[in-house]
Every structure is written in structure tokens, then in C-alpha cells.
Image (cartoon, rainbow, N blue to C red; front, side, top):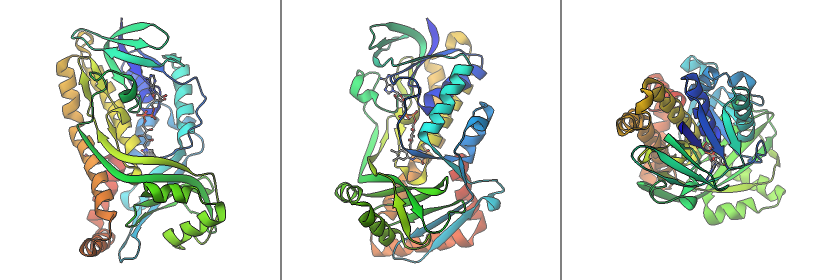
Length: 384
Ligand SMILES: Cc1cc2nc3c(=O)[nH]c(=O)nc-3n(C[C@H](O)[C@H](O)[C@H](O)COP(=O)(O)OP(=O)(O)OC[C@H]3O[C@@H](n4cnc5c(N)ncnc54)[C@H](O)[C@@H]3O)c2cc1C
């Protein structure tokens, strides 16, 4: 019987396996997809705190295609108030880093291989039987594997494949009735490592510097997003200019558009005896504040640290789970609350709220301690 078995070698599962190894615990990992075939075009914005974790795992220096964000420009359409955050004000080289999801998973897969961590690719877990002394994972290839601790890091997909006991319904869900349109765009002016976050009544839009172009996340109602995503290039670029304004000059070119429906779902970490959920399996967030992966990465890091501090015979027991859930509560609820607040307060056109938001942005711009407070939360999470 393994001591720890991880379901999913996405970024969160992979970081968990690497961090466990640093604690002297050899985890076994099952990943549904074949090795190194990721075609996911998602872009991730990593916080400085996430960089520190990847540094400690020896992964950061192996990453290519990383673009630092040194400044963030926050505004709302059709109203006063602009706030500007700068890395220098926070005393850091960068406020965050932008990189392709596929580049991160490739680097993590390489790290798993050179660390001789047992990862089986192309093996999907179908269900998990939880019991007081061990959990048993049943794989699609017919094998059953028991472990003292099963870590579900499957990005929240298990709701469709696993039993209700190990894939519980979310404790809290909010459908924002929004879809994100994502693609890369080329602008007339160079990005100079500046990101934009623009709030509009239809939903937030973000431009993240990525290589020599921008990654765009444009949120709108489901119907509008499908319409926007389906526009021919020239019409799409013109619509984006109308929506975003001319701070970066004209939009010159766009890659093919993809859409992602957005919601908040909080399932929590404790699933069943011996089964813990981390990353998107525990919480799925709106991408407005770029917190999702950063939270998941801290889940993985904190779980591995706690495993290292727990006697082997107590790995995965109820006391360990309670300590883990208690330790993560402030960070996770803080991240969910911050993201939910931004989406709900900024995605509307109610007059008094629009003015209050303008004043909030002006205050953020004018008050260095407030700026520092917000920047630290974006960089290090709710406990920053
Ligand atoms: C449009 C969009 C933009 C985003 N932008 C950002 C951003 O800027 N910054 C940020 O921090 N976050 C962002 N996120 C969120 C981020 O993508 C997720 O938080 C992150 O990918 C979660 O990592 P994960 O490892 O938990 O899940 P995933 O990345 O989904 O990985 C799960 C892994 O588990 C495997 N798996 C699934 N089911 C099984 C099974 N049954 N058996 C075995 N393996 C299985 C999958 O193949 C996959 O490899 C964004 C999300 C979206 C939708």
C-alpha cells in the first residue's frame, strides 16, 4: 500500500508530488492524459508567492516563456478612477508572471521525471472507495490501488466520474452567468510589462503581457461571449478597441478565440475518510484576479508541509485533515471572497456603486498603505 496517491498531474498535483518528495515522502501519481500532449492554450498569471514555491522546488529556473508583470493598470469603463500598482512600490522585481499553462505543465512533468517520482500517464481514476484505514482508487485499466492518503487534484472533473462520497457537491456555488473569451492579441504599442484590468458592466477584461503580445481574458454574458468569439478577426479587433479603449493603440491581430464558462464553486478540502481535495478540485474561481492556480499551489505546498510534520502512521487521519482544513481556511476563504467581491461589485452599472468604485480606485491610487495592502494580497494571498 502506498502512503500517498495523487489523482491528477496537472500543475497542482505535480507541485504536491514534488513538495512531498522534499519532505521525504514518495507519492504515486495517476494522470488521465498521455505524457506531454497538452494542447491547453490557457494563460496563467502566477503571483510572486507562486514563484517562490516553484523556486524552492527547483522548477522556476527551468521555465521558459515567462513574462514578468511590473505594473498593473486598473480602471472601469465610463467612470472616474484609475489605480496603478507597481512592483517597485512593493519592493519586488515583479508583481506577477505570465506564462502558458502548457509550458508550466511541461516543466513540471520534466521535474517529476528527473526526480524519479512514480507517475503513470494515460491512467484515469474512475472512483475512490473511502474507508477509515485506507482509501482505494479504482483506475480505468482495472487496477485498484490503496493508500493511507489519496490527494484528489483532478481540477474538479471528478464530479462527473466519481461517487458522491469522494466527489461531494460544492458547499457553495455562484454562477456568474459569464463566459471568458480568451486569445492572444497584438497591439500597436509594446506592452512594456504592463498588465491592464478593466472593469465594465458586462464583466471584467484583462490584458496580460505575454512574450511580445498580450493574453486577453474578456468576460461577458454567455450569449455576448459566444457572439464576440465568433466574430471575424477585423470585427473582433474593432469590438475589442471599443470595449477596452486606446491605451495600447490599435489592436492589430488576434489568435483563434476560445471560451470558458465561469463560476465560483467551493467544495472544500475534506471529501471523505483518507481523501483530500486540493487546487481546482477544492475551489474553482473566476479568473478576474488570477487567484485560482496560485491558491491551488499554496494548497499543494501546505499539504505537503503538513504531511512532512505528521508521523507516517498518522498520514491521512482525521486529525491531520482537520489541521489542514484549519490551516487553509483564511487563505482560501479570503481568495474566494476577494474574487467574488471584485466580480459582483464591478460587474454592474448601478449609479451609486459606479461612483463608489471610482472613489475606491482613487483611494487605491492615492493611499500607499492601501496600495501595499492590495498588492500583498495579490502577491501572497489573504495572509500576505
Ligand atoms: C479562462 C481561465 C483563465 C485562468 N487564468 C488564471 C490565471 O491567470 N491565474 C491563475 O492562477 N489561475 C487561472 N485560472 C485557473 C487555473 O487554470 C486553475 O486554477 C489551474 O489550472 C488548476 O490546476 P489543477 O492542477 O487543480 O487542475 P487542472 O489544471 O485542471 O489539472 C487537473 C489534472 O487532473 C487530470 N485528471 C482529471 N481527471 C482525472 C482522473 N479521473 N484521473 C486521473 N487524472 C485526472 C487532468 O488530466 C489534469 O491533468 C484560469 C482558469 C480559466 C478557466
